[in-house]
Image (cartoon, rainbow, N blue to C red; front, side):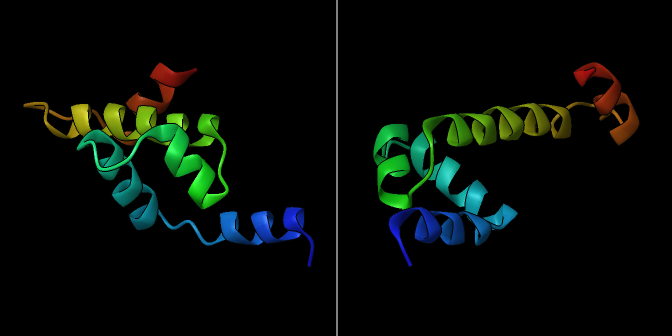
Length: 77
C-alpha cells in the first residue's frame, strides 16, 4: 500500500465523534490545524470545514429556539 492509499484509508476512519474531538483539541490549543493535518494525513481545508460545521451547529444548539434541519439546510443554499 502506497502513501496515497494509506492516507485514503485513514480518512475513511474519521467518525463524527473523532472529528469533533480533533476540533476540540484545536480549539483548546492542544494542537494547531496544520499540525493536526500533518499528523492525521488530512488537509487543512478538511479540518477547517469540520470547524465551521461544528461552530454553526453548536451556535444553533445553543439558541433559545433551535432551527430545525430543514431551516439550517435552507440557510446553506
